[in-house]
Amino acid sequence: MNPESKYRVFVSYSHQDTKLVDRISMILVENGLSPMLDKSLSSGHGFTNQIKNFIAHAHVFMPVITKESSSRGWVHQEIGYAMALNIPVLPVSNGQMPGAMIQELQAVRWEEGKYWRRINKPKLDLKVFDSLVRCAQLESQALFECAQYQEERTTMMVAYAKKVLELGAHGHVRQKGGLSSFHIPDKPITHPDWDARYGPLKPGDYRCRLQREERLALEEHARRSGCSLIIKPSLTYSRYGEAARKTRLTELLAFLESMPDHLVRVAVSERMPTSGNITMVGNWFLAESVSAAIGGGYQQTIFTRHAPSIQAKIELFDRELTELLKVQPGRLEKSRKYAIDVIAKVLKSFKKNSSRIKN
Image 1 (cartoon, rainbow, N blue to C red):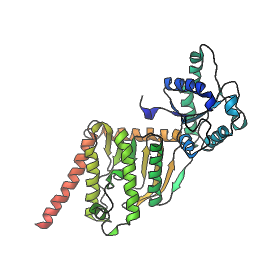
Image 2 (cartoon, rainbow, N blue to C red):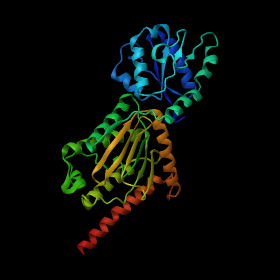
Image 3 (cartoon, helix red, strand yellow):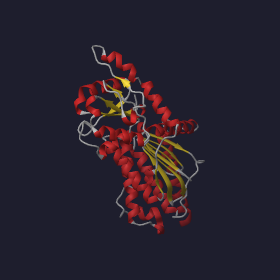
Image 4 (cartoon, rainbow, N blue to C red):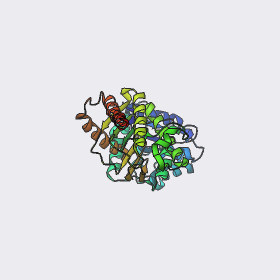
């Protein structure tokens, strides 16, 4: 099963319940789910930022309620944090029924004995988790952060991408809008490409440095898990001049040429509006900009790590990409090659225009 299609289940537990948690995790894996465990920290060593990062990226939060865990204050902190983020909560109780803020939730009753596996496996079936995730999508429970301006957007994009890497994970990069982040130079900001990219309107070293970090962070994910892009090569960037357009297309071309076919899907959409942009890294986080000016950067960008909502957005993106590829020469199997040919054709037109001017 594709790791992206698996629901992540963060299991909160006491270190005294390790044997029970190992059994629960075994069943989750057998049922096609991905348990998230941080054994060095979540086993009773406090409520840290790392734990918050795990919980925030989970599809479902699963507190294991026992006599031991119920007496620990950090368990209730984790439960409260998950509920504040509107992450579906599915308690598993073993002898001790949930109390306090989750007492109204229906808990899965764990049963021990010789046939523990056969008895408990149906209780943690994939359908149970699918129902929880679908309900979270329908109720629009996602919490968002908003970046008002380009610099804030880029800073947050880098931070979100790195937080996923800190978990030891990476995700497939989906982007729709303009030429994607892969037309940003990956070279040091002292390289001439940065001057050419902006012409006489270079925004300053700070913004360039941030943009380079965005390119490198997203590329780290794409190199490992691939990328799906919906791009518009006909953008002129007339505000910055012809050299800016050439530099941006050349950078994107070099990226596509360096990637293997099986890691890239590219759809060329000349009808795509340029007023917005969406970026998703796996089902780990989403960034969607609702306003933009060509060459002026994206503004009013909302970010979320609410996995159930991101799952729905991925399905919409993939359907749109599939429809575009159906009518594109080369379709899926050769979509990278087709995009390369389109960009190369545009770049070739620069050379022709240059020759005409000289003549």
